[in-house]
Amino acid sequence: MVINEAAVPLEKGDVDFPCIEFTKVGTYHFKIKEITQSGNGWETDPREFPVIVIITDENGKLKATVEYPDGYPEFTNNYKPEAVCVPLTANKCATGAPLKEGQFEFGVYDEAGRLVCSAKNEAPY
Image (cartoon, rainbow, N blue to C red):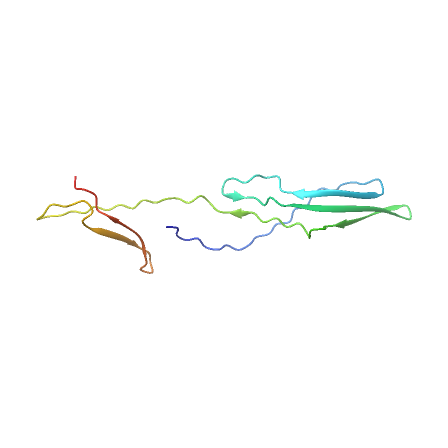
């Protein structure tokens, strides 16, 4: 049973690359992709976004135009920490008659009164 999987808000942070200097007219093709690998609860976005930089000469001055053919690059990483299993325990005591394995069943209920899990008693020791 999985408990407390709540949606979290999307947070954004800009990624500003250092300037790339161009000295010649031309069309240059690049791709932007995330280098960080998935791990530590994070699943990184594997997509790659093409970028086209077009350098033109306008009266002796180079001008750059940037195109994102597949749309503006936006990477979404998902964080989901590894689940932790919490075993709960209790004791069953019996007087006046022998206790049999599996004779009594017990439940764990959440705050709303819903049954989360159940278990039966083990053999007496």
